Image (tube, rainbow, N blue to C red):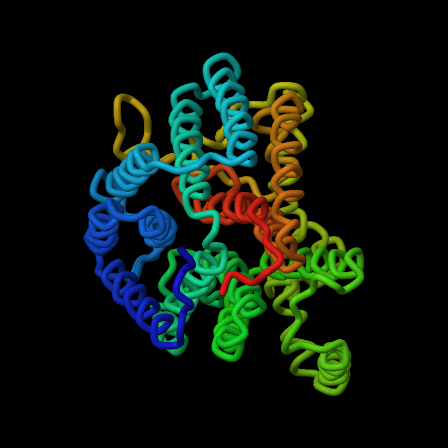
Length: 460
């Protein structure tokens, strides 16, 4: 049965529901727990709704609207998100579907990867309990995403539209906070985080949802104007977050999209409202504006430098600031770990600083911490630092095979796939399934599975 074509009314209705859900999550102390419980209850429905609950839950965990921008500790904060993951996984396993070739391929990789991570956790990791916790959560999350992606593979556009709507809902709730101190980070007060707990989280989230908005606009001609406006609003808000990782991800996705269009000779591109002429005019206009306006040039420079090196008088001080104040310090730490543990890594989901970042007062389940963040900001090096060259030999072919499948659908899907990967080149969330990494894997796996269902005719 062909899915019903979405309309402006249905799009507004679903976006409104998300606005309400995220507004509930903004309630201090108990809001996120209430929102997650609502999602747990709603998850027991059709696979499409279950999938949407999982995606929305990954975002709810980043919402906070209090005077102090930090995660609430304790079981009330961390417990519901794991309950949601268990509920979604259970629902995905009992649902019946027709396994496809790509489903079998992904499940084989899942089994191999799970084995590698469990072995690494037990025999390699410097913090076995933390690694075991993260291996279990990552494996379980990836399993339910693969299952749900298989069950909803023919609804590519509908799922991408939902991700776009999530971005729109966050923008609607965040824009009123622009003139208020509550919407700005405590890290110097110069970075906007809206209803999220951190500006970097908001920036990389808006990259993915904005890109999904533009890709969905290609697929739904009757909603192109609305989706284009939503995408522009989401990407415009990135400027206030000063998230440079977002800029990298957008550029990577755009380059891959352009290359895919060129490779295909432009025949499979779904450009209906953007012409080469308009692109050239836009680029020339932006370049001219930057040349003529010193304020725009300074604003762009501040965005790129995050305003953290202007105050240093000498070049030596600027270089030192770049190596310690940005991702340079994290890259240096990763290189040190790789030098000491090149083949097997330091341990999945951990680093020499893990015990420093872990909250000693956080809740535990059977001795395993319910939250154990890690600060590693560059995906290739972080992967080798955690699971070594041996583990990377399983990850890289897995991602490449998914990309090959995703690109079968369209060059837009190929660009979106790479943009999602790109957010991990400065804010590595790739293995953090309990946080926004869940959204990353939802999009990657779904694009791969729906790519294998490619049809020459549009879905709607």
